[in-house]
Image (tube, rainbow, N blue to C red; front, side, top):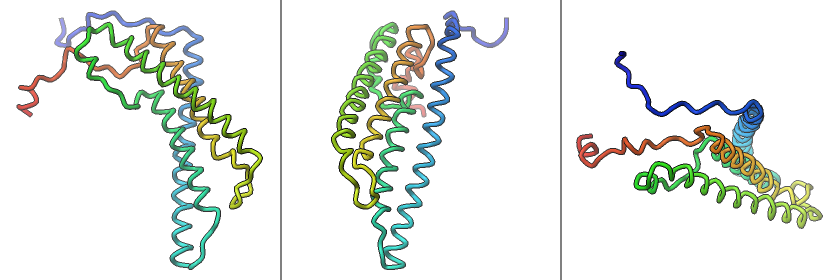
Length: 195
């Protein structure tokens, strides 16, 4: 008998080959979204620096830098939010997981994912309506359709829908997609005082 403790819970079976393929594709989409969001953040920083430099050093301003920076910011916020959903980095209120029976964790996390999915569906649907409504108008500074301002809502909403559905399907396929809160290892008040 070795000195390591063994888990009494059996290991979950691996997901089916179809789910594995879908997971690889969604993982690639997530990584691409993350790098694109990072690129947009860097580009936005450059635009803002250029705007400040031209305004305060050269004493003239560009009409395109501010709106371009805002557009890029919208993209990296919504792309980052979608990646956060997939990687389980979104905010959660986990207090109930400490006091309810262990079996309720799967149900509560699924309810959370369904709420997120519904919100994302609203983002995509109403964002699409805003895109269509504003497509005929032009942004004077850039000369592109006004509807482009709302495309991040649609893109981010669609990605969040995909990633939420993936989490729900994988959870019911027996894959642990949640960052575990080990309810048996909740620190007591005495342990907190010792630290």
